[in-house]
Amino acid sequence: MSTAAVDTAVPLTAYQKMWLASRFIPVIFFMAALIFVLTVLPNLIGQPLPPLLPVFLIVVLLVLIYGASKSLRDLLSGVALVEDDELVKIGFTHESSDSSRYGKFARLGRLKISGSAYKQAHAGQTYRICYSPASRIVWSLEPNAYWSSVIGKN
Figure 1 (tube, rainbow, N blue to C red):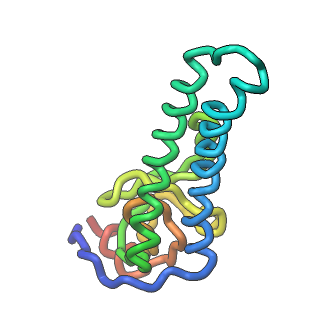
Figure 2: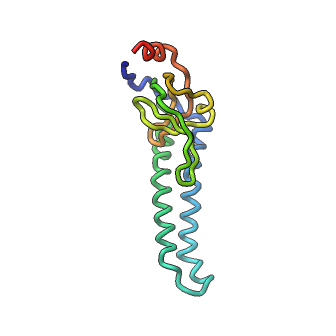
Figure 3: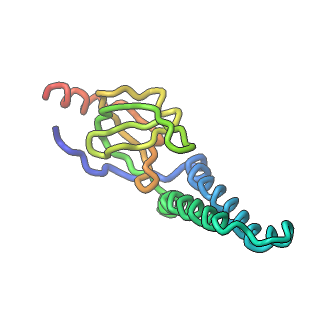
């Protein structure tokens, strides 16, 4: 099987940009919560805060910032990559509070798959994949008949 290099990059659609930008909503919420807890809450309850509350909020905020930074890199690039790869496995998982569809690809590894792409995905087929590399989400899959026939002969 031949490995395909990055064929092209395509501009992100408005929907894709909005999805990537929406990853900042929890960051904004937890940042506001942390500021509230550190500044207003002690005055409201009239006693010192439990010391683990700000620590907990900071840890949650750091995790969310890490995830949002991946989306920011894709958003700032303004493009999604397009490559050919074989879908080895497809599944659905409940990781932490995030239910997500995923696909394991021969070269690209494990990627999240958008709902519309998930509906047409079948393991063992080769697809032309449009995806964001940092956030690792597949936006669309197109069956690639040429690659499927080459892989089927091996």
